[in-house]
Image (cartoon, rainbow, N blue to C red; front, side, top):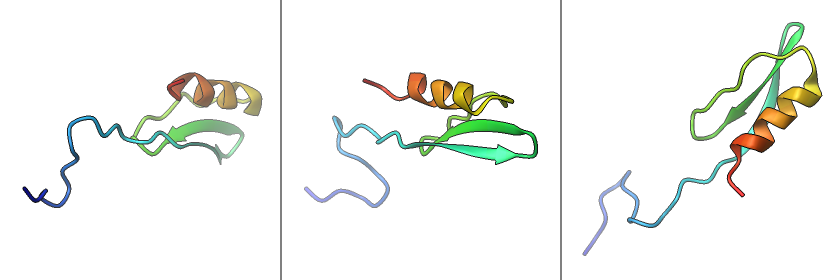
Length: 56
């Protein structure tokens, strides 16, 4: 049976790829799944937010 475009097989989990983005004096974490962390002044805290979002 062929899959339709845009649909994933049951068991295919979306991959979470996080990055940090600077916006003025703030830094925030973003993920390819659409998640966005809070704006932080400390880059290290934004990286921690990204790491805690990424599944083990």
